[in-house]
Image (tube, rainbow, N blue to C red; front, side):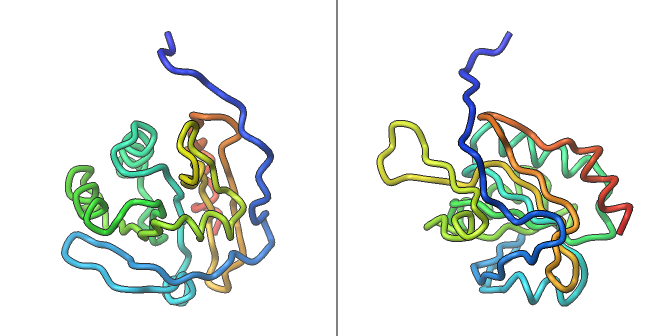
Length: 170
């Protein structure tokens, strides 16, 4: 039995397969430190699985990272994006075992990256507060989107097997 409301989200205008993923620079947090990094810097090293998630501590974030950590994404860099601060991300990285998996998190408190990707979600009852809706983009070295998924309702979760298949098809 679901003990929370499921609601439809408005249509998203996110990058589709074959389109170019918007570049951005934000603090990129790992288990030990953070520093500004650009998506294009990461894709210059190889494909990136870009995972947009709600703020750290929210149940969808916890569930999403649990699923990603349990799967094998060794062929790509897995990087999250949310509105949480670098300090909150450092705690999430430690608590969720993201450091052991080699995953890192971009901090985007102003939610501008989600806006650029067309996946910003206004939080109910909080004027002026938004966060990314759950979304996953597989971005190739030239920033071409090879896979795209975004939530259509709240809450909604990626089809993890489909994400694994997309990574395997690279």
